Image (cartoon, rainbow, N blue to C red; front, side, top):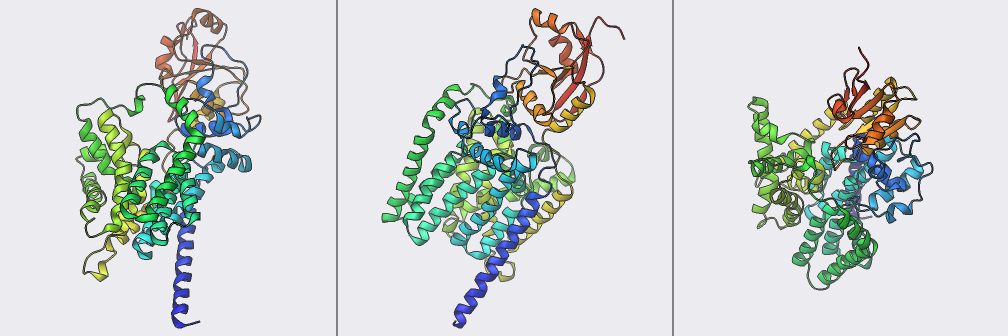
Length: 528
C-alpha cells in the first residue's frame, strides 16, 4: 500500500467513525423517553389509519346510545394491511406512511414507544442522507456540520418522536436530492435513475406538501444537467410521476372530491394584520428548525429584554438563511439547490397563507421539510480570508443546538394533548356502568375523536357511550333521564352541558387536562 493510499484509508476510517458517533448521538436523543409523553390526537389517528379502519372515528353514529365498545386502534380483529392502501375516504394524506406503520405495528405492536420508533429510525437515516448530499455539494467538512445540526436540532428530534409522516417525508425528499446530486457528479447510471423514479413516487405518496420540493429538483435538473444526464433524469422524474398516478390517481380523486370545504378553525386568521403576522412567523422559522417550536408572534411583540435579544437572534437567523443564500448565488453556485429548496417549502406555505388567510406557517410540521436547507446554508458559510474563523458561525450554531438538545432531555416539552391524563381522570371517577357522553360541535373535529383517543388509553372499558354534535332530540333526552348521572367530555363540558342537555346540570367542577375536560352531570330536578 502506498503512502497516499494509507492516508486516504485513515481519512475514510476517521470519517466513518465520526459519522457512526454522530448517528449514535442522534439515536440517543431520539429514543430517549420516546414513549413517555402521551400520544396526541394525530398520532392516535395515524394508528387508526394504519390498522386498516380508515378514519372510522369520523363515521361513528351520533345521537345514538351505544352499549358496545368499538375498537378503532387495536390490531386485534383489524382489517388486513392492504386495506390501508385501498381505503377511500376524505383522509387528507397519501397512504405510504400508514402502510409502513402497519407493517411496523405488526412486528412491534401499537404502543406509544413502538409506533414512534419508526419515525426515529427514519430520522436517523435522514442524518446519513443529509451527510451524503452535503458531501457531494460542499465537501466533508460542511457535511459533518450540517449533519450534526440535523442530528441534534430539537425540531428534528420532535418529528422523530411523533407517529406522523414528517420524518419519512424529510428522508425521502433528501433521498431524491441525493440521487440528483449523484447523477450530476457520477452520471446517470441505471440504478440511480430507477431509484430516483421510486423515491419521487414515494415522496409524493408520503405528503402532498412535497410537491414544491419535487418541482424544485426538476428545475435544478433542467438548469444544472446537460445532454443525456438531463434527459434521463427528467425521464426518471416522469416515470416516478406516472407510477404515482397509476398507484394513487383514483384515491386522490376521491380525496379531492370529498374534502370538506372551508378552512379548519385552527388555521384561520381573520385579522387586519395577517400579512405582518405571517411575515413574523416566517422570520421565526429558521430559529424553530434549530431550537424547536417557539411563539414567534409573541416574542416579536414582547417588550421584555430577554425576548428582545431573542428577536434579534431570530431576525439574524432569518437574514442569514433566507436572504443571504440568494445574494451569494453568483459566487456560490453550490447553494442553488438549497435556495430553490427554501422557495419550494417556506415560499409555498407563505404564499398559501397570504392568499388564503391561513396560518400554516405557524405550525412547524408544515414547513419542517425546509429545515435541511437551513442546516446546509449555515454549515456552508465561510469567513473569507479568516482561516481560524472559517467555520465559526456553523460551530457556534452547532454548539447552541447541542446545548438545547441536552436541555430538552432534562426538561422535555409537555405533550400537545394529554389523552392519557384525561383517560385516567375518567377511569378514576366513573364506574364501569356509567354513561360517557362525548361532545364537539366543531365541523372539522368529530366527537368520535374523543372516543377514539380515550378508547386507545382505556382498551378494557365497557362503559356505554354517546356522541353528540348538537342538542339531542326529545326521545333521546327521555332515554337519558332514566340515569342518575352521566359524564360529559368535551372542551368546556360544565359550560356546554346545561344547554346541550336540557334538564341536566354540572354536579361539580370540571376535571381539566390539555386534551379536554370531564364533568359529572346530574338531572336538574335533584337538589343539593
